[in-house]
Structures are given as C-alpha cells and as structure tokens.
Image (tube, rainbow over all chains, first blue to last red; front, top):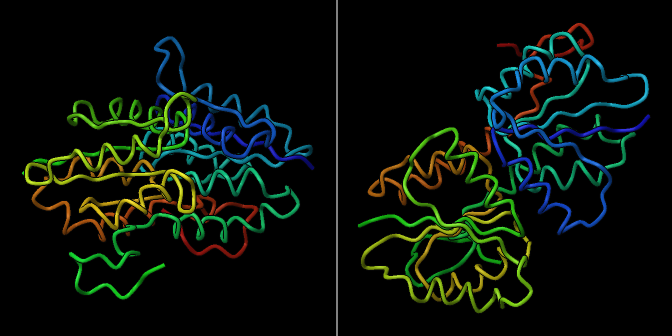
Length: 142
Length: 142
C-alpha cells in the first residue's frame, strides 16, 4: 500500500507550503497540489469529485489536506468523505505537513490523531516562552 | 496605535498563504511577507534584526508570524524577542492568519492567547466529524 497526499487550498497556499516543505525536508516524494478557484474555467467541485472517485483505494491510502474548516474547499471534500474512503485533514500548518510527509504509510492512518494533536501544539505564542523584562507573570522559559 | 503583521517562513509558504488570504478575505490591509533563505545573497539573520530594530514601537504593534517551532526562521526571531517588544507566533495556519488580520489592533494583543487556541482547534481530522459506514466507533457528526 502506498500513500498519496494532496494539498488543496484556496489559491496559492498549497503551492507555497509545498515549496517550503521541499526546501526544508528535501526529497520527500511527490505531494500533489490543488490551487483551487484560481482558474475560472475549472469547475472545482467536479475536479475534486474526479480525483477522489478515480483514485485506486486498493493501491494507496489517499490523504487530502485543506486550508480551513468551514471554507469552500474543505466543505466540498467533506461531502465526498461520505462516499469515498479517503482521509481529510483541515487547518494544516507546516508541522502537520512535514510529519505526514515523513510518516511511513503503514503507520500513517493510525497515527493521524497523534499527528493532528502534535500539529496543534506547534501553534505557539512564543512571547509566553520567553521571560522578558516587560512580562511579569510568565513562568515558562526555554 | 497601528498593527503591523509580518509573515516570515522558509521559502514561498508566506507568499502562498497571503495570496490565499487576499483571495478569501479581500482587502484586509497590508501584511508583509518574508520568503526566507530564497536569495542566497541575503543574510537573513541581519535582515530579521534590521526589521525588528528599525520598527517604531510607539506607532504600531509588531506581530511576526513564522512557519514552525524549532525551525531556523522562528529560532532567529526568538533570539530577537529577548531584545525587542514585538509578538511572535509560530506554527501558523490559515485560521490564525485570517483571525489576526481581521482583529482590531486595540484587541489583538489581549486576544492572542484566544486566537492561538482557536487556530489549534481548527486543525481537524475530518474523518472523525462524519459517521461513515467504514467507521464503527465515531460518535461525532455534523
């Protein structure tokens, strides 16, 4: 079983985060990219359905990563999630994408809740990590 | 007091997420963008210091948003956080950037812990939101 990852976002977010991923992690294998609603001649609802319906689920687990809960891209894939056995993760950040791209496929499905949880912990207000002179009540430091 | 937001990431992530933000939210005012380590002729450590040292803190609150905790970009700004009174948030996703761009400056500093917390909640394994035939133990649904 292989893994197939598709990053689908409004506009160029997907393209940008993937270029950064390749810069940091080097060759982590192919990750597909959808820059939705950029081309006005494309019906993205049809395109999303085509992708998940034509995927061969006997050969590879399919993971679709989107930009934001409640956004159009994620809403479209949510509809398809009722029909096709892919995995859908939204609200992606760099830590999530890095972890998913590095995780072996045989561990990835089982690890998804842990990876999501870890990616959440990676969103940090760093002001609170530092004991600064202008802060009085922070107990945390590196 | 104004607000000044700078998104600084390895490579094109910052550029991509900002293009998507403008696509979704329209004109949300200027947000600056640093695509770090793309230009080999630029000393980014010097550049980051120049930005935070030349900022006029009496005129605007400065918020620097970076890609990943423990990454080079965030590490460099962490060093500067000990010297300059800006705010540093890492692990950004779309929800965080959207919320920060929409929040009035007079509420933003105080709201940062809540915004960070909400952005974390926006990273979701959507499989668990849907009662699917191939899942047996999920109690959540829309």
